[in-house]
Length: 245
Image (tube, rainbow, N blue to C red):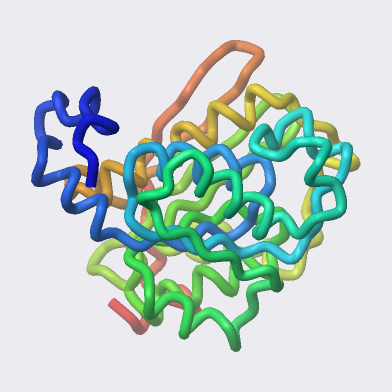
């Protein structure tokens, strides 16, 4: 590991060489290689997170390029997970990057989570979000779930299955069967995606170095330029995590 590459973050109190070693040993699953996933992955690769597993079954389209900034016109038509893996490797060859170019489901997730320490939910659909949450509860994996649409976004920092900790289903119990809004219909401001992705990556690095916890939510609104934090409450009767605590 080249410490010169990470010299600026090694100066940070509470990180140093021990924190850098923790990042080098860390394994992160990034579920979704769109606007959030590409930018969050770039920051984690730049910071020296040792292994990144990228999961997405989509291909790069022209309409992606205004916010999914690691793709180029040469990537059009390519599987996103594969194209992103190549871009990250070109930026930091010290990081082990693997591509899972298939949709995540409840059958595939247990094996993937067994080989990771943290999950970044960068998905664009509720079925995958709920499957990720349930798998993280079962495996007791920390989960950072982010979303961005129009000029706003949110991030949840979760440690599901732990005492007093909420899971995604506790916070959003009624969306599992919802199609939800999509950027293709509602629109999205590219830099707002970048703000939420940066916040997600920051919290990931804090968690991986032992400085970040769960049970927190942040809401970003570009119009007023506000980032509003809030605590979360676990549902003792939650159908997903109620019996796991």
